[in-house]
Image (cartoon, rainbow, N blue to C red):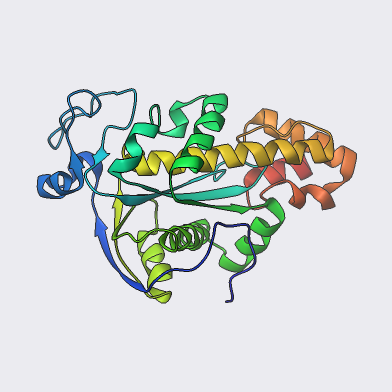
Length: 272
């Protein structure tokens, strides 16, 4: 299937193959963790052993020894708005500029928007934004959210590899990491892909999560302004009520322009 046109980062890059590794933050073998990360008494507490909880920190708890790419998404659980996938390369040379960067779920929206500007100015990155109409079209082809996510992650990773050579990519451990491997392998990429539990503890994944969240917020706001009404985040009863107001004003036929139609929320909006 030829890739549909999307708004993405720059293109270009060199051929690589993929080796898939499953490592999980606190469950990763010590040799793997020590190879990837340094320990800092100020910013990075000692990594816990298996079975222990990771201490809470104000920033990423894993600081890279070498540069690598992190990838994350936003909008996956939101009825309104796009699905946004971001990839970001972070090396030791970037860390001084990334003060305050951590998992976007732990940040307020204004802080995510502010930090995203710093990350974009500092780090090689790519943002793939799939608006609701295109999202519904792609979902109808893939018939599986994890396959769609793997496709989008691969596009974002490829765009960053075209800007900066890199041997390692870290992603959250979603349901189909092997699918991401296949997507990259088909393009001839030779990288190590590490799928980690709680990958947002890694600074590159945290930076990618902020880029994705900020772009989601910007696009959701613009979409609401286009239709002259607020489109709330999530998939709560407040979202259902907003969907019903949208349908009352514009008709059910316009709903795919602003919402992800495979959500059960769509049925509640249309039939409720």
